[in-house]
Amino acid sequence: METLTDKDALTIIQERKSVRSYTGEPAGKEAIDKLLRAAMAAPSAVHMMPWKFIVVTDIKKLE
Image 1: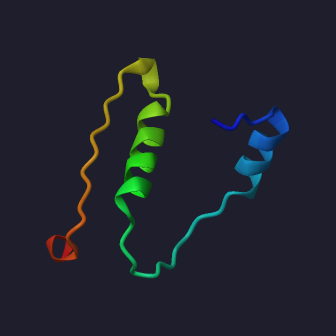
Image 2: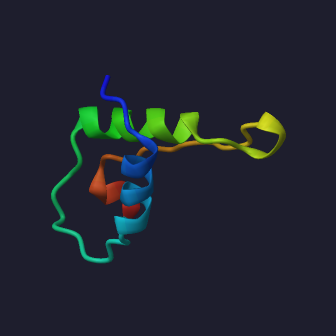
């Protein structure tokens, strides 16, 4: 796994941006798994981890 230096991490944080336009292309299973692993590794208050994740891959269920 690649290691980030403090400067690299700070650069990534400062250069991040919100995305408000989407292509409509579905995310792949690997990308979803990677995002979920990152979300689960994020800190939570008093390490309570009160989050739940629901992944919907069927666009019809979102409508």
